[in-house]
Length: 190
Image 1 (cartoon, rainbow, N blue to C red):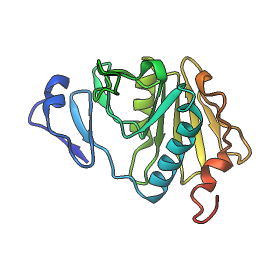
Image 2 (image 1 turned 180 degrees about the vertical axis):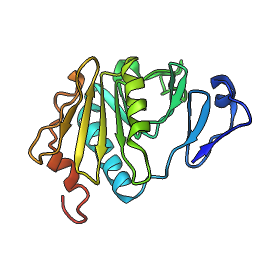
Image 3 (image 1 turned 45 degrees about the vertical axis):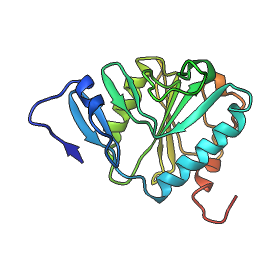
């Protein structure tokens, strides 16, 4: 759903607005509301965050966040999963995590919803790659395909169940195949 104000607003004006449910993103002067995650989307998102954080967080390598607003490069977007390396997590003076993330994630992960356009999501991933983001994933549950976007490289399309998913250099301990990712959608299967 697109909310069109009578005129384009600035990023600063957008950031002063109250949050919406579902959340809205600010892209090219427009406010664009994200679709609500459905079953497959939410399952993959939840499992992926648990998987990433179980391996990278205890070692203070990185942390995965769900639906985190990231504001940078004139846009304010909300990746389905935003992963920040430990040293790039914004912190308050007391050491606690900051509320505002005014930077691109190191790894951005998007999960395509049935009513979402792949082009819009891809544009957000490419925007991230133009800043500090090392890698982006676009997961398509319907097609059981993962597109891997790496800065300054040709995208990689993975749809074979035994294909090992590429991860950023800081996350080499993560070992996940396409089949591992999509088996999470089978209720009652580990």
